[in-house]
Length: 296
Image (cartoon, rainbow, N blue to C red; front, top):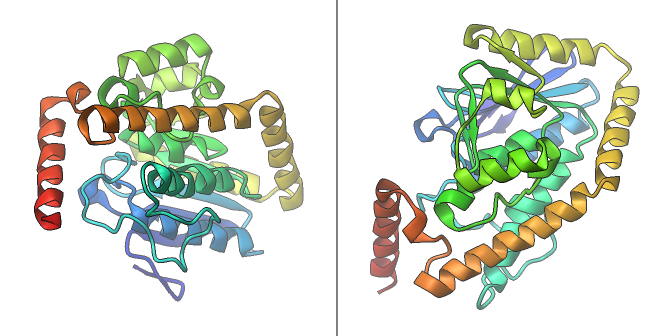
């Protein structure tokens, strides 16, 4: 979508108020599932807002009924971006064994999200509907979260995929350890109200007030001294890291890789098919069959 001289296929970039940028995930037919295209468009849009001296606050929103349904595993997009788009230094994304998988996931899930989390300007999530697994990563990189009363959150990686949690593993820093354990082990949904009680979100509002409330919060913060707001964010992020967040995220990422490797060794696919719901398993098996047919 054309936006201020740039073309985004899966995003809308707008400035709904002075000093506020609003980045909108715009793939409603896929419930805003995040693939390679969206990942690098988000990176471009966030960099654009951070480098614009007229912008003080960023809102991350989404079109449609649901904010983000997680990683796109349809196979419809390229597995990796063109070399000129890659922002990390690992390379070797086609390496043998697990080397290529590891480098890829480190690039597009761990390192890029950590950089977004440390963006100097405040980022506010404006969330409606469902947020599933990979979508949780985008939620947790934001500084403040405003969600509609029908929003709900789920990390299905442990219950349905044989993985110990999403790649950006902040679970015990978003809620208590026992709440995080139960949430992962059961794979249950967390309502917006529960998320607020656990301290994961700031505000819960009726759906028809969501955009206005997120913008109101953004305008309030945008009116403050922008450098002071940047310092506040750095101070809070540093304090959280001193409590072990960064080390926990890195360790969780490596456990995530072990889960993938275990599934690959057990059944030749990096997700535990036996744990999946029947409909999801059938879709994955179709994807595997299609890949095998094209390779043959």
